[in-house]
Length: 561
Image (tube, rainbow, N blue to C red; front, side):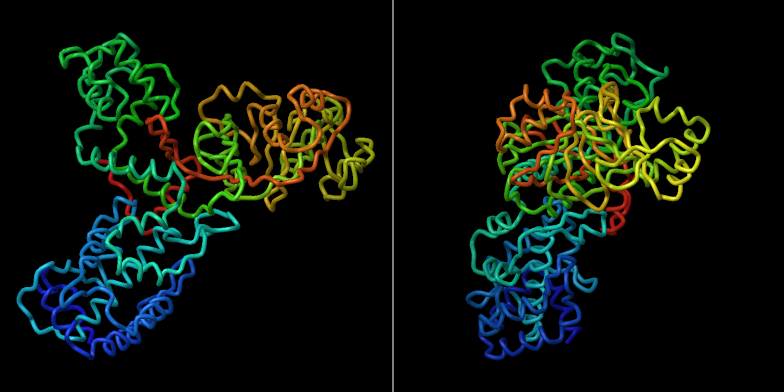
């Protein structure tokens, strides 16, 4: 039977029309489909999303008395043709066509619309094609809806996942619909920015086909500044025009080898889109970004689409932090539209494995004004204790206290050698008093979680001027704590105006405000974002998670040239 399957999969387009005519007339086709499903049990594995492919297809065929899904009126159905066309274009979804067109290493051929020569493949061959095409559809459906891997394998701890989906029922709908792509669209993530990114994928895939776009000559000096000569200026104009940074009408002739004002403005836009210092000059980091193969940008888009498929729909307006972007988005509705989102810069964890900000989702449940900073034991042990042992006066200078017990009412202990050693043995803890120099600033936003990570203000405002803001031990520092507090407390009793928030931040006492309705906070990781205005933003793979996801998906690295 397996040899018949291979013959069907390798048949020409004309062959399938003949098979369809034979299959439609053969009363044994239902039995053949039932047998094929039984024989394919081991091949129709459970997907990473937990969908039992064999079980769901068995139920779907049973509802149809094991009649074929993919033949109509004695020939391959137009739905089969449309579905195969969609699978062949899986790359437009950021997926790989061979994952659906190949089965056991053999290629699914596209059925023809017109009958042709009958090669005698018979009932078994057609039954196997029907089951294989249904299995390919089921796999594609689960990948589009849930993603290809379990997000936990990639370090995403999101709690609730995508909505449940009856994959067999979707296969049934596809087999009877004239609108295959509409059905597929209905099971995709319904985020606007997911749809925008799919559109960007098509454009960047087309640009990646022109290998000459990103091959720029290296500058002869360390940095080419505005107004200076650069022999690669014509190629640079071509690249920036293709990427949308340089209006064609503003492009100088190819004979102009200087960084003229229009080219400088285009460079600044490119630099802003790629999270670089915006100076309009061609320095080391800008050259690296300009010389990155566009196929790598395509890969970034594909990986980000995969991650967006892991997200559950928003049941209430969330707060989202995108780690590589160093940005926070506080949604005012469940729609991901810029007009309904408060945005601000953030500082995230350093790139050292022990100091990275984790990727997770939890509920924000309370806000603390004028918080104590409870120094994590790891910081106490590695950073604070050596200074305390050398200089007990370090405590007072940094407004630190040694205390026992876990609540804010704990009484400070004297900095005796015995109490300092109690810190080392975890018999006491170190905390910093509330105030302007407190490491948490004047407010922290608590979302209890296993990582002990939360959002807070900071006295180190100068760090927000940096383009690459990975400075913390894992927590997230926000650039506009007053605005975030006003957003978080907007529906809470107490009339939390900016003036009242400012008074609480600069008062004399620590104040905790419990939220009547918790707010979902999602700490995510995406290295590209399509904006509503058009520009596409790319970010460095700060923690190497793109490389990790590539490996999990079995994707080969993109060549450097």
